[in-house]
Amino acid sequence: MNENLAELYRMVEEQCKHYDKYERVFNGQTWNYHVLPVVKNSVRFARERGADAEVVEVAALFHDWANLVDFEKYSEVHHIASGELAEPILIKYGYSQEFIDKVKRCIFSHRGREVKEKISIEEVCLADADAMVHIENVFEIIIWRGMRGDTVEQANNFVKSKLARSFAKLSDYAKESIKEKYEAALKIFY
Ligand SMILES: [Fe+2]
Ligand SMILES: [Fe+2]
Image 1 (cartoon, rainbow, N blue to C red):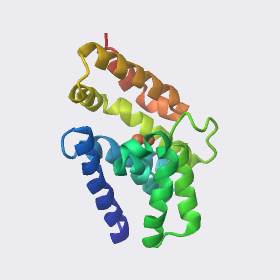
Image 2 (tube, rainbow, N blue to C red; image 1 turned 135 degrees about the vertical axis):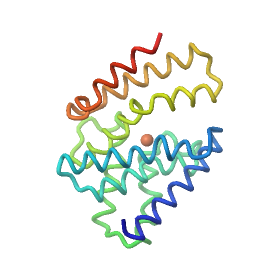
Image 3 (cartoon, rainbow, N blue to C red; image 1 turned 90 degrees about the vertical axis):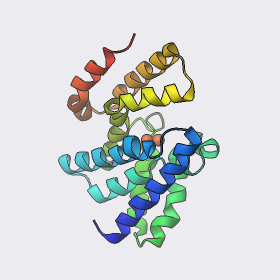
Image 4 (cartoon, helix red, strand yellow; image 1 turned 120 degrees about the horizontal axis):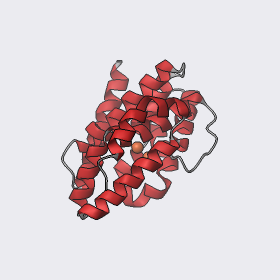
């Protein structure tokens, strides 16, 4: 990994800690159980499916950036704001405008409900990776709901429907790779 990219990893990891505090979850939880696994899944999907892995990796790093900066302000528009806020950072680190535009497009369409037809394979890789992590790390979501003060019933209902929504968002390719875990995970809910 080149030094610039390593620096971006550190920057996002630090910002995740800010969000951990806001969410009152354990220090490192957001990075270790959401952002970093999204990056890893994205890059794996990009390699397997012939997408531009560099674009996908940077997009995955910054896909929820605006939420990490200020959740209350950006949550509803974080798919737009994350790209906008990441742009000056990426310019500073020497990325070309063409590269940045591709990153922003991926970030924009990671929010499933925004774009029904994803245009590029890079966009599909990030959206798949993001939704898949909710299934892979379902345990973290249960803990998060508990820490927020949900009752057993509230957490059960929330997480169960989140799992179903995440699975429905996936491309057929990603569905195939997570199907077994998804079906197993569903069995623990009431
Ligand atoms: Fe997001
Ligand atoms: Fe995300």
